[in-house]
Length: 205
Image (cartoon, rainbow, N blue to C red; front, side, top):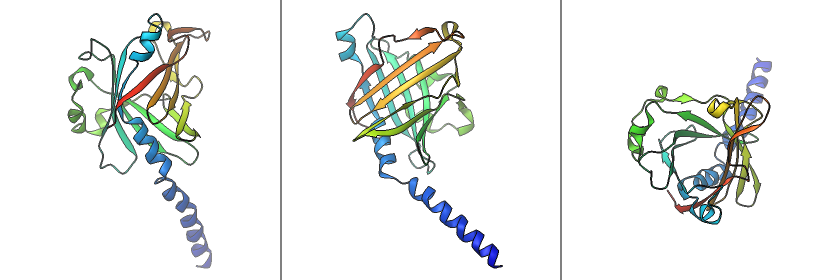
């Protein structure tokens, strides 16, 4: 009996840091920084050759879920907002040493364009996880979080690529995102070459 009590005691106090960590100020801050409406127009006007004018929406959904923060995400070229080229669901979770943004795809995504409330009504099993494509973030400075995908774990078949990488930095009013695709010789075959996209926040959600 004494051994059982000791084991339960140890298990309880091992669990406490996890419970506390899941409610940290940094976790809430990062989620708040992510949510918003963004534009890369400023960067595009300075370098029209290498960067497009892209609109990015990161909209909170499923706010009552207790397993982290959920977002519906749209990216579209300016002038073609009704036809986004990327639509995802992000699930932001907290681990002991990092924050993880798990990426999910949607079936027939264009039907959700500009309609995050439709995503709210979806059952979870209608999402498909992009395995190996999670973005891991850590606090790297005062009011700053940065990180990316890990190694060659995120598969891609776009333009002859075999894997993709993402490098991300997030602050209160700025999101830097550099997505690149590489072939099996580690040669870049798609994505910006000079550096990541600079998305300025226009609206907070």
